[in-house]
Length: 180
Image (cartoon, rainbow, N blue to C red; front, top):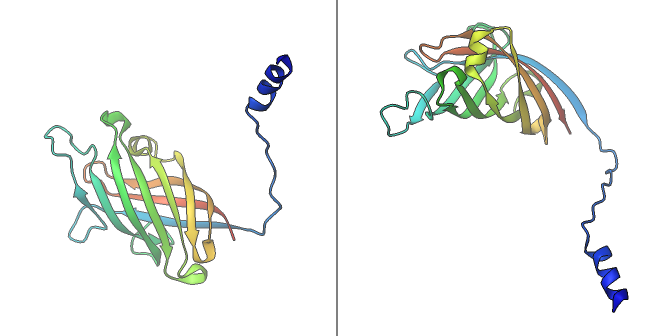
């Protein structure tokens, strides 16, 4: 009986083993472009599609749908290389911590990566960007298609223009992608 009581704890303990998978083929791609999120004017690229039904929420919890241009430079009039399509929710009750949670597909419509896209799902602190334009924010890449199939990586983002009154913003993106 003592023998069986001594063996039970040995087999009942948590067991874990980490096994490294074999190396897989992969590519590294770095991209640089500008994103323009425009909520104002007669032809906005982003529009609110849902709002909370309370009167004191302000912009908090607004759901925005977007189809924004990606360009080669900081001005919207420069050559367009693709679109950023997705959703974001404005978050944080405290206006000094205002931000957004974004799910966005960055699709390329010209050049070497025409027809390919990558996606990110990340938090974006808007008020931090507005306070210090040179501040760089890191966002997570969670997938891709086409040339960026199964992409993982990160995007380093810096604001080139922010208007907190109407919500318009332009951002510079430096993206590092690991993909097949």
